[in-house]
Length: 430
Image 1 (tube, rainbow, N blue to C red):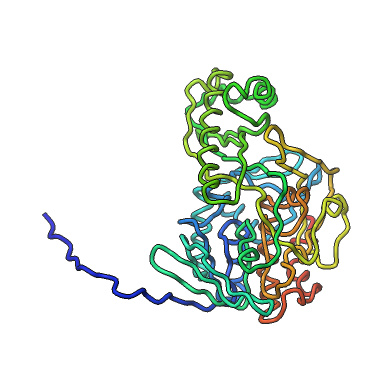
Image 2: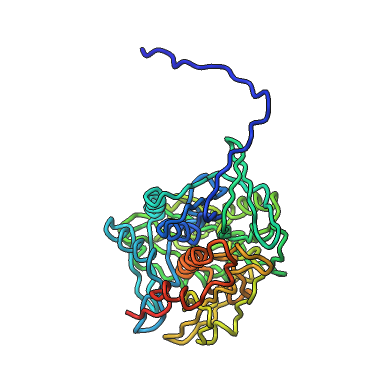
C-alpha cells in the first residue's frame, strides 16, 4: 500500500496580481481561422498568444463536429484547389493516417475525423511555439488612439493580461471589436444554427441505399410530428468507420447567456427527435440507431465587424478581383435564414470570387483584424465565405498582414507585397 501524498493548507489572504505577457500578435479564438493565423504568424518568427474560452482548441471545426472541409476547391469538371499552405498540411498529414476522405462531386470536399484533426492542431501549435490559452474568458479590452493596448482574461487559475502589437479577432462573434467599443453588425432576422451529431448502430449494409431526397421529403411531410423544424439537411456515413455525421436540425443562436444555454438544450432535443424520426420512418437502416456524440452548437452568423469595405452579394456574384484581394472562394450562397430550409444560390462552374483585406479591418482601428465568420459581409456573402476553406485562407492572410504591418496600421500594408506572399491562395490553378 502506497503512502499518502503529502498536502498543505493554504488561504488566499490578498487577491493575487494578474499575470501578464507581451507578444507580437494575440489571437482570440482557436477555431480553424485562429489556429491557421497562429501557425503562420509563429512560423514568420512572431511571438504569438492564442486564446480561447473553451477548454480545448479547435473551435467549431472540432467541438461542433463540422466534419467536412468545404469551400477549398472551385466547382465544375476542372475544379482546382483555391487555398493551400495549412490546408495542404492538414490534407497530407490526415491522409497519411487514414483520417480524411476526399469526396468528389461538383466540387471537392473532405470528410475528416475531428479527433485526429484536434490532435494535429495541438501538435502543430506546440511545434511552432505558440503560447496557447484555453478556458480563457475575455473580461476587458483597453482601446485608445485607434489601437487595442491590451486585453484581459480570466481563467480558473487567475487573471492574465496580454499586450501585443497586433490583434486578430477569430472569435466568430466580433468579440474584440464589440468589447473595444467599435461598431459591429448583427442580423435583424435570425440566422439559424445547427447541432451536428454522430449516429452509430445503424445497418452498415442497408445504409448504402440511403436516399437523402426521400429523407427530406418525409421530413417535410411528418417532421413536425416528431418536433422537428428543418426539412432538409445531410446524413453522411464515414466509410468503414461505423458512424455517420448528421446535419439535419435548426435552432436559433441568441447572444445572451441564458439563451445560449437554451440553445444547447434545444439542439439536443432536436437531435433526439431526429433519431426517433429515423428509427420510425426508415427502420431498415436506423431501427437500432442511437446518438454516439452530440456536437457543440454550430453557429453560423451572430455578430460581425463593421469594416472599411463590406463584401456584398454583388461582389461574390462578380469575378472582379479587388486591388486588396487576399483570398479566393467559390462556395455558393448557403443562407440558413428560415427554420425549414436553407436558401442556396449556385454559381456557374469555374466561378471564383475574391475576399478583400479591407473587409477584415474594423473601421476605426489600426492594429486589429478579423478572420473567419466575423469579417464584414452582408448576410448572403457571409453565408458563402464562412466555411472552412476560406477561413483557412483568411487566417493565413491575417497573419501575413500583421507581420507586414508591424507596429504600424494594418490598413497601410503594401497590397502588392501582401499578395506576393499569398500568391498560392490567389493565383495557383494546378
